[in-house]
Length: 199
Image (cartoon, rainbow, N blue to C red; front, side, top):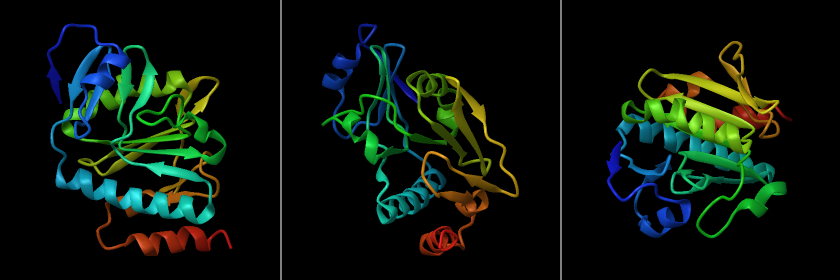
């Protein structure tokens, strides 16, 4: 990640004015952090998970899944653009024209070499602070995934048994973690496995 040097600290409102529509950036403690270009592996996992989540959520009419250009406001000096997020139908009121003003139900960050610290520290604490129900961390280099669930205001890691993660924030949704890193299994097949188990 690259830091954009401007008079500090930058407020959320000023950040929105400075940011261009094509910029991928975060506001962390009043500093603008520009994202470096994503690796192929990062984008492959992003595309796969986005397809699965969006198809599932729309099929089940649960809410909306948005991608990496959506700005989530944390506070006056912090705002992040997560790789993926889910907002339930009941909470769509937090969606504004150019930001999410409140906690998404689920936030997903796909970790890359340049984002490792931010995803695990600043973003972790920020999403926890605003009350995100589930925070998923997918490591695109190590092929591992961690899932955190909000409990009494703090994220607690969810134990994944037999490589299967069951979401509580997205009704009925579960995932075999290995699917994310397996190039042979396709999105339609995964969706059929998930929805088929609900019949």
